[in-house]
Image (cartoon, rainbow, N blue to C red; front, side):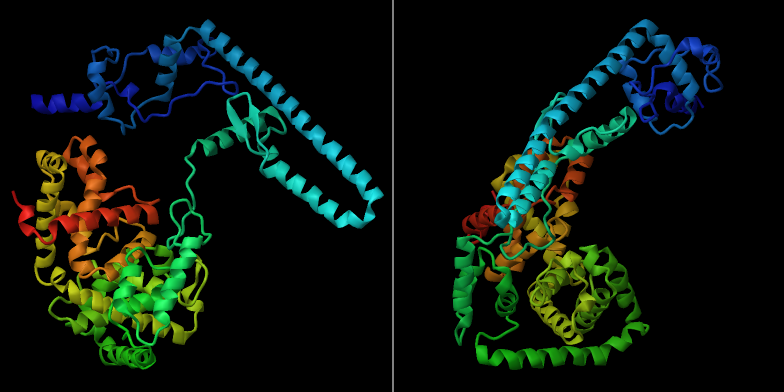
Length: 547
C-alpha cells in the first residue's frame, strides 16, 4: 500500500509547474499581470492547494525534482488562476511595468525607422517613373520597350530588392514592409518571423527531371549529361545492342529519356536484337493479359481471397500516395501482385513485394509523359498505353524477383543470410559502430530486415531508389548480392549519428527514420562508390568477413 501511495504522490506532485501547460506571454499588446487589479486572484492563489496532498505545503521546484515534474507533462488538473497568482507573487510590479514601457517605446521607434526606410525606397521609384514618362514623350518609337522596363522595375521592387531592418534581418520585398495600424503590423511581423525561422529546403520532385537533378534542384541539362545521353543513344541505336557497354554506361546513372528501354534490356525483358523487340513486347503483353483472364476472377475464391485481401490492404500504405491512391493505379497494382502471387506458389504474396512494383511503373509511365508523376493523373493516359505499362511492369518485376525469391519463401532464409552477412561485414569495416550497437543490444535483424525486404525503398526517396536501381540493373547480381554492400555503406554513412545515441530506443528510432528526405544523385553516387569499394575488398574473399 505504501508503494501505491508513493506512486500516486510521484505522479501528482507539484502539478502547478509541469511543462506543457499554457503559459501567459507578456508584451506590448498584453500587459503583465497587475495584482492590484486582481485582488480576488491573489486571494485565490494564497489558498492552500486542494485534495491531492492535504496538510503539506508546496515546495519550490528544485533541479533534483526535474524528473518528477516532467514525468507528468500531460496532467490536465492545473488551474490557470493559480498560475497567474504565483506569477504575481514572484514578480516585482515596478520592474515589470518599467520593462513593458521600454518594450512599447522600442516598438514605436522600430516602426518609425521602418516607415522612414520605406519612404526612402519609394522616392527613387517615383523619379524613375517621371524620367520614363519624359523619355516616352521624347521617343515614342520605343514606347513598348520602356513599358516593359517599367514593369520589370516594378517586379524587381516587389521581389528581389533587399534592405536591412533594425531587427537584424533582411526584408526581401516591399510586401514584407509594415503597412497599416500597429495591431496589423504586429500580426504581420509575427507571421513573417515564423516563416523566416523555418529552414529553407529546395523543392525536389519524387522523381528527378531530365537532368537527374541532385539536391540543388537544378533541372538544366549540363554538357556532360548531354554527352552521356548521346552515348546511350548511340549504343541503343545499333541493330544488336552491346549489353556490356550498356551496363558500363548505366552504372553511373541512366538519363530519364532512355531509362525505360534501358531497364527493359538490362532486366532481360527485351532481347538485344532490335528487330525482335516489337514482336517480343506484343507476345509478352498478350501473355500477361491472358493470365488476367485466366486467374484474376479467382481472387474471391476461398483459397485465394486471403492473398487478395492482404494485397488490397497493403497498397494504400505504399508511397508516393499521390500516385498509388489513384483508383486506376490501385487496380493495376492489385492485378500485377495477385497474378505474380498465383504464378509463384512457393512464396505467394509477401509484404514488401508490393513496393517493388512502384519504380518500374513510374519509369514506364515517364515513357509517355513529361510532367512530374506526383502531379499527373494516370487515368488521363490512353487505355492501350496503361495496358502496356502494366504488362511491362509485371514482367520486369518478375525478372527482379526471380533473382531474390528466397527472400520471400517460407521463413525468408535469403533475408536471414543477408542480415547475418551484413553484421559480419560491419564488424570488420567499422568495429566501433558494431560494438556500439552491441552495447545497447540492438540486433541487426531489427532494422536491416526491412532494408533487405524492401531493397531500401522505405529508407530512400523514390528518386533515389530509381537512381540506385540504375546501378543494380547494371551490376551483376545487383539486387541479390551488391545490395548487401550498399546496406553496409548505408549503415556506416550514419556513423556519427549512431554513436551519438546512447540507448536502445534512440538507436532504433534513428535507424528506422534516417534523414534522407533531401537526398539526391550526389548522395546516392557516393553511397554506391563506397559500396563498390567494399565489394572489391570483400566479395572475392568471404573469409575476410570473419576474424
